[in-house]
Image 1 (cartoon, one colour):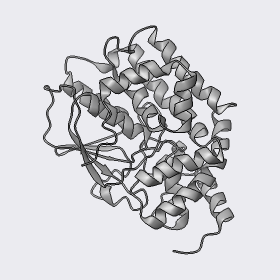
Image 2 (image 1 turned 45 degrees about the horizontal axis):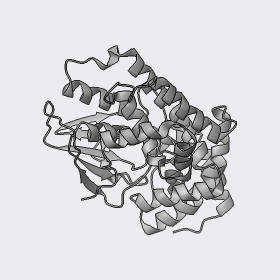
Image 3 (image 1 turned 180 degrees about the vertical axis):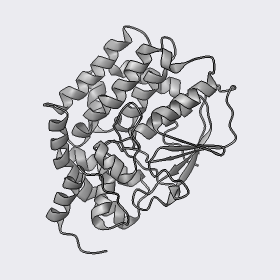
Length: 320
């Protein structure tokens, strides 16, 4: 591996987040850039801008943008959930993802809640060899038997209508409104929070690289170079999204969601709807980071989140 000039690398990495140039090959610069994907996108990692998501193959939902990236230590894992799904029983479901991607986690929350057994294939963000079979080069990609599905919101809409063909998801305006809010507002407050300070940026990348599909050399470069780069990039993201105080924005989003519940157990009433699952899926990757812990401690969202954990089940860390 070529020697890396730290300052030059970080400068190029930060600048690259504003572009959409396609990346190929695993140079040190690209390793850091790929790690920063965990900041926001459609296949977007929890920690980056949509432009960087496009750059590294993160698909943007049809109604929004945002993202997160987390990686599992095994390339493939199988997950089973607990809710009955008798109406829809595919033989083989495989999710191609980045573990910490908020949009990938939206799909996982839906699959878990609806008791659809599935395998997870962790995609290496540099080579993307796991999805070379597909003409679509972003994640999430869901293969349902022989059918390829892409775009987190579209995936969820299609699966939801197959599970409940009598329901038309687009007819529920409240649910539609809050799903749109997740993709267009909630995801944008995540990166400024998980990269808010140097220690929080390092905490985030320690998790990402520990659970991701990285080689040892990629892991070291991504952890330290990515954390440093995203600490500075997060400042630009704050300005772009008119965020003055990152924590206040996160707490405000949490309180806005609780207000939307209007005293109900879930937005869907006694059971979660697609908006509940979207909020939960996007927040799940940050729950045990400092920002997520403080969000639960300083807002009213904790009760709803705990109820969602019980309803969805915690299959997130299950490995075969």
